[in-house]
Length: 161
Image 1 (cartoon, rainbow, N blue to C red):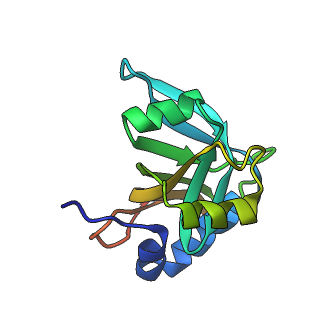
Image 2 (cartoon, rainbow, N blue to C red; image 1 turned 60 degrees about the horizontal axis):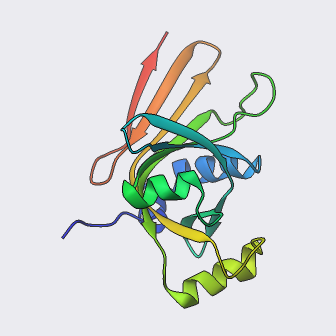
């Protein structure tokens, strides 16, 4: 059985990085989701994400291409919206993992209560099983810093000039 690394487990392992990632995703409503098409080529789509009940949730319209991609192959990468200009306060962040379909009626009801999707009876809901969290930022106007976290590993940081 494969172990699941949900957002709560990541937050316990790296609370500081989790705060930054949540702030970056909270700064804007729409982000970019990369999925895999049936032929294996990438597809990017806009997406809203939610951090609820100590987890990261992806909600999608019924029958959307991105939902069909994830139902066929759950691997994805989610890039936080960098915003206008080049400021990117907090850095550039992305999350990779597997999208786990949520069929549990109670969890779906809680999500509907928080998010109010257009059609509460018909939507795809996925919970995120993390495989990687990456933050890239500039430190002291001198170094490009890349932080990489993977389940079961220590946070790695690489500095480049």
